[in-house]
Image (tube, rainbow, N blue to C red; front, side, top):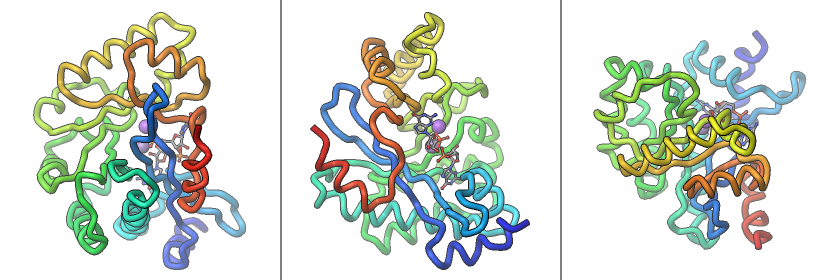
Length: 253
Ligand code: G
Ligand code: G
Ligand code: MN
Ligand code: NA
């Protein structure tokens, strides 16, 4: 496996990097945060899909090095955000369910956050909903994310792993509604009803709700109509390298 073979050197050389996708208020009132997404342009194979990078890291026992690289880039962005006029914006990183049972993700992130003197409340950890179903195995790690002061987001919420019981046992800060749901929001009554229900769920549990995959102005308007306040998607911005964020922010109306 070429990817597995080359991953270690690519992490060391900086070829494996974090790009960032903005998260915004649907009423255009501002930027609330950024999601870090791994990117690797392999010299022979071209761009490697993030799930393949994550898989290769697991297979070669380098998940901690991969997540460490992304967390470090997230902290570097957090250090710059006050100077970019966004002192309260959060930065989120994705943590794969499987790595939670392999090493102490919280210890790793703690050491990076301390080194950068970052407020942990500005760093959000995204875990897919699927992972939260098996809290017996990783419940301790998840509880430590919150007790250490980090924000916890449930990623791909509503993508098909429907058990809500974990919401009663964990301190969840944000539900990230799967982009499959946003896709139907202008055309399907069903999708609209689901979005309304999820917004209500978030309100009653005091959990922020962010809709992913907003691709058109029509999606954005429909979601706002349904009571959503925050979103992420190609309509607002694609993921971009951190050095491009300054211009993107400056050019926003
Ligand atoms: O960036 P893109 O949409 O291609 O990402 C595809 C998938 O890979 C998403 O589910 C995303 O959560 C995941 N992903 C992206 N970056 C990372 C990362 O740094 N770590 C982990 N574990 N998953 C990531
Ligand atoms: O699973 P997760 O939510 O982490 O995945 C985020 C992925 O979704 C990123 O790889 C990003 O490139 C992709 N993405 C972000 N916005 C959009 C969008 O508006 N449409 C689609 N199709 N993908 C998006
Ligand atoms: Mn995510
Ligand atoms: Na998601």
